[in-house]
Length: 476
Image (tube, rainbow, N blue to C red; front, side, top):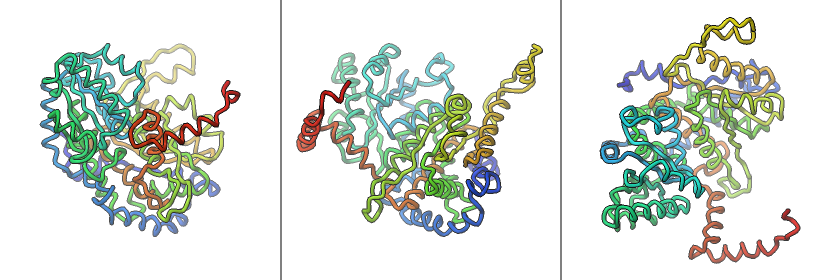
């Protein structure tokens, strides 16, 4: 058991934010920030933090209370699932899926689903976060639905992708188990009282978990949305929440130079204002690659907005780009180092991996090969991360690094929460609502109209009018 409550242990596993390569001292005054410049922005940053804290646990900021929630009921549900099923399938998309995927990749064995049952110690975990029909049907080649629990996750109950998946899997279960027994294989994670799924929960007697009020999908990883799949797979969810609670405490200080989330939000914002609207996140750990996917939704959906708080059209928002070290050194680094100066980079590195892998020595007489012997793969990956950061710095490209002591539940919960609070602070800096998503809704509405959903006749008429303007010669 990890010692989550011991202050010295917490300090040892605090995520450090190294922003030396954002500073003029390192990358030059033409490209970096000076201490004086950041100092002049301190009051602006503190006001943004104060605005977030003032709204804490109200409206769409109720996610800030998630680190302190009781989890006994979730753990009991997970224990029941683990005892009865060989497979656990999440039906969800966007914020209902990306957190669970990130948790799976970071904290489970890299080949969790391929392990033998006795070595895995729990159900296989699958997250169906798309509606490609070939991909969905292929699932039936690797699992038996009668040995599977399906967790349908949608707060509204009207998410077309998720509910279409559910209608399909429900029919599979009914066909094989009958109307009387199929519901034993269903968990509905949805709103406590509202939405299209809640009446079905009551009607069909599904086991249900609640998506709390004021917790939007992209901020829901530390709710039942992410915690139940994690617990079913054997992840320490108390550790996740302990890490998030620690991040909450260290994010409360108004001292810019001690508050990781505040410094991250401010420097990202200032880079955007300097003409660097592209924000690259590049973890140097295979298990953290989908944390960058989760971050991309959090950053894009929260901060890409047409209007500010006053209703003025501003069309702001940094564009997140996900990359993976060292893989994408061989696919993207050329652009990053030599291309346009429109990017700011965030690396995530790990001090200590679960394993150390020595590189064997073989004297081939080839100096390009022989120098590797006696080192470890761990050393090589660390050198690749530092080397890329230094190359960017030498080219005057601003970059910073989140340094993680090791990947465990505590540090991952901490990282999630730091990025969430940084996003909320960023919304205040941009003077926009970080918690709505009108752009996403616009696409959903048109999909509803195309499929004939009642109530969307006006949108269907607009689509037909637009189709009438299309010309065959513009399609090759």
